[in-house]
Image (cartoon, rainbow, N blue to C red; front, side, top):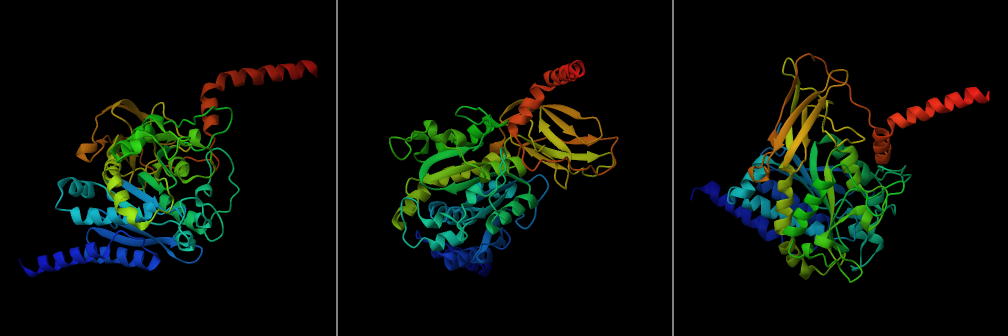
Length: 438
């Protein structure tokens, strides 16, 4: 073969050879990611989204046909692992996922189409300080769970149901900025200590008993099942001991246990990104000789889950001159979000919806809404959601952003829509009563 192929093959083997089944500490992890980027410069983009308390980079490797920037119509996907520093399996299997994706590109038609039609962001560790601080690996809790300031990063985000008073950590802020700067559509964060796929909501206010349902509960159940049923054993729902059973290997977060300030709810509410939490190992920090089995158990599920970013409907909202309209609200009727889902700077929207018939409502503040009925097929196999554009012929302005409360309360949204009229009657009645008593 001509020389470039030999060089390519050599690079390929040198990268593959560098990744064995063991734990990679900060320097090795950085060296591996830099090696992959050097070997596959046109398929990958490596950048740090910030630094930990102790100054370690929070590396993200982006993979895709256009790795350096967002391309119109191509959805953004992310995996984040090792948010709890002592939960280590996700950190390593994401490195093996990277290895699998780059070495399969142009060899495996499914992976090739996936990378050509999806921009995949992989963050192997969100809490490098906690990982380095875990000196004695343990199956159960260690201090390494927290960041250097002793904060639990999965209790550190703004909360959708109550004011979270935790002071935002550098790692959390970096992820919040990252979510704000990309149009993420789908995500998962990888944990350990159980074997289950957990989905939004994690918190609740008021008197809900045992289940905190989001407006997109059906989609979340589908996403969680996609992972659990493609995993070697998660779908069996055995959990890790007799006290914990999860039918079909999934659970509503709140049904399992309530938590405030979690990352998955933050993604969904403020980031317009559907995220689930994957608990991948009964033992938080298992022995390195088990890592190969963890990779085998999760490999198919990791790939199948990424494909779900192509569920539903996507499109652009433009004005009469064909210019994109940012901040237009685009939502499916009957699925209101407290922070309305809005178009990005390119006028694009992405809505994850299961196959079926929906009415999509596009609204430019100050103008009449446009409604379009769409029949959504299952397009994940085609690596492209249904395309539905909206053109506002009377608009030639840039719309203002619809306001999003700092502390959205989902119950308030339901109450407001259900109880507008009775509330008015009560107000009138109270006014009359006051007049009489005065």
